[in-house]
Image 1: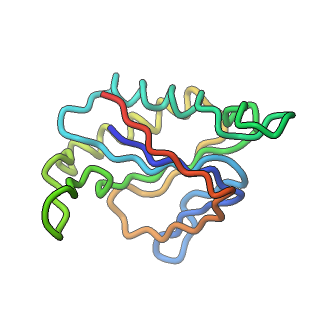
Image 2: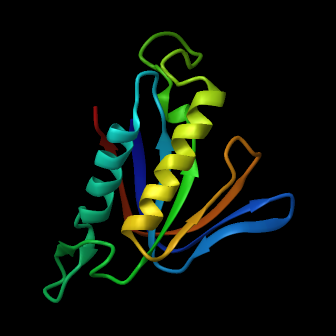
Length: 146
């Protein structure tokens, strides 16, 4: 399972001209789910995301996590994160979990995140989403767990 996390000043997801999820400062998290991923994998990734220290502390160093920075978390499913891109000029999405299974696991990941953190917004699984963001820094990290 992969997460591309971005420290943002503001982010929102729009589907069919309606905002489905929005946060002020915090983390925009794109989630890629691979074949073989489980709820335990998802929980491990969420725990890492919530503890990951990428916000400026009192000394201006990346010492605070999202809770310490009093930020929000915006979760967006993105199967393209699982693409294999090493060969050729076209991505191979073979490693991605099939959509019907990935949807169930993504929803469990969202529920778990909401149980661990107070400010959680989401996009809509498999929808055509427009993601608007102001990246703070820019600060972007790729996290992966097995």
